[in-house]
Image 1 (cartoon, protein in one colour):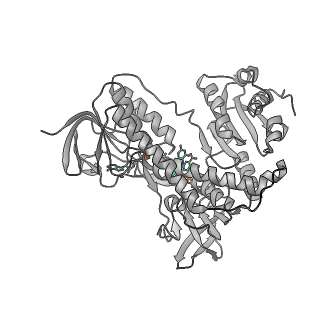
Image 2 (cartoon, rainbow, N blue to C red; image 1 turned 90 degrees about the vertical axis):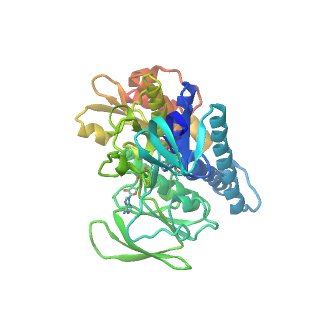
Image 3 (cartoon, rainbow, N blue to C red; image 1 turned 30 degrees about the vertical axis):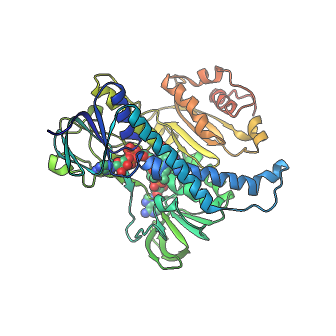
Length: 463
Ligand code: FAD
Ligand code: NAD
């Protein structure tokens, strides 16, 4: 007789493995199928974690080569051991994926090794063995979006996966796409010495973020040496042994031109991954973008089959996938888990960082919501001055009538940590006045958040 589970999760990324852990914590009998040799999904293996390891290493290198002299610190000749840097990144990944394996053992989650296919409602085949499950959770994540005319070989023309593994610093890296991946990995290789050109189809970078932040962000990155070709589309790429020739033209039409690169990084978005799952045979509906359609509480149209994470609608972020995993597990155990989609922070881990939560001005205008803006620059923050990191500002948007916080947008040092206070405030329905009245320690970067909250009412103290 086939092994039977209460919950069988397909995919061990942050959505799937967290769902499996939470369901097991709640006393359910749980299995998680993963076709990759290690647990942790895109995020731990080829996404969040390795990219942050390289961002940290390259940031250290850039600080030593560019910034320390201003602090009165000089060093002899500074070397770059890229092989060691990449090996360290591998060690960080390894520690994280082994951590998930440990958590599976601790919580008695059965890891089914291999590619899973849903053969019928309640039935999943993994590596030739069929299992039964009361609930099946699709958490198969996403993959890099291909770009017509730009064939990826992961050596000369790479996705983020190859972009995390370049064995030497390219002389000229062309990044296609000025979003999260393009700017993070573009920053890594720029700091390590590459000339980096970002080719972006739209007339601005990070299109989902606050427009004013995006303009400031581009200016700071340009100061660091990144070059931008906005409003430009790539129509073809030809790789040779020595490099790549890209054909680009203005997005709105015009003469084509060639750009020579050593390496091209394709970072034009990601798409839901459902290959080989057998969704058509069991009748699981997908939307026009190939994402699994879910209704209330992550249920698909087929009873007993659910979906979470990058494979469904919403921002493709690890913490969104994790929170959906927890909420679904709690629902399956008879509890009332939920996710507040209005308060999901997004962070670009460049330096300075860019972080945002809630609505942008563009969204508020489109929704016809009247709002006040409070802004405070890091140039006026004592700690930022002491650090020598004064680029950027905090910008808060609050309802004009009620003063309730509707959005927060930060570009600046440690913006990713600072945004947590504002996410917490928004979860509690705080007003700008509430944040302004909280005692923030001095001297900290968080005082810029308090000052921006004061600025909503025109009473910032230090500008
Ligand atoms: P995934 O992590 O993609 O996991 C899905 C898993 O399912 C994979 O391991 C896959 O092998 C497995 N699978 C697929 N099909 C099957 C099958 N049929 N049988 C068995 N297993 C299967 N997000 C952030 O929040 N912060 C960041 O800093 C960040 N940085 C990123 C950097 C990069 C370079 C990339 C590419 C992404 C980054 N992301 C980041 C996005 C983040 O990685 C994803 O949002 C997150 O991994 C989604 O989790 P998931 O569980 O839905 O899917
Ligand atoms: P993205 O959606 O962030 O950015 C893609 C960019 O490519 C956009 O600016 C878009 O306008 C542009 N673009 C699209 N088609 C183009 C074309 N033909 N030519 C030129 N530009 C084009 O996508 P991404 O950077 O590939 O990252 C994928 C997803 O992974 C992100 O949306 C995010 O959800 C996740 N991610 C998150 C983090 C993080 O949280 N720090 C880091 C990396 C990735």
